[in-house]
Figure 1 (cartoon, one colour):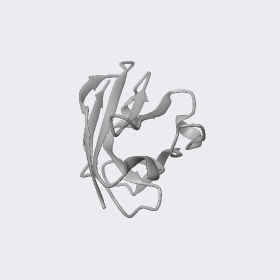
Figure 2: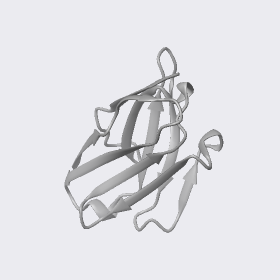
Figure 3: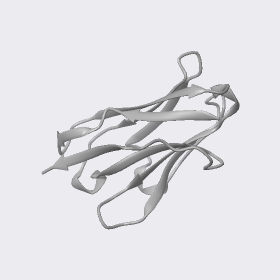
Figure 4: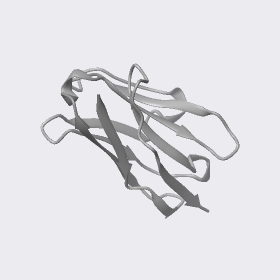
Length: 114
């Protein structure tokens, strides 16, 4: 199994950029395609981005295309989510997970103030 831990969240202003990180430990990280999800207050957790094992195939939820950029560094066992031009609707807890949804981190909270 692997363990996942997100970081990088915080309170930011609308229009700012933020990079979230997901650190993996345990089993061979590069075997796993990875995803980011987010859960806004009072709403369901939704898919945000997906990246395959080597970063060659990436997919985004339609509403975040152009502002979100997912990447990974297998040597460092890290997955990243760059978010540009943040708006208040991006306020949420952001989670990283394996694509098969077997492993999840505990999330990192992003609050965007207007």
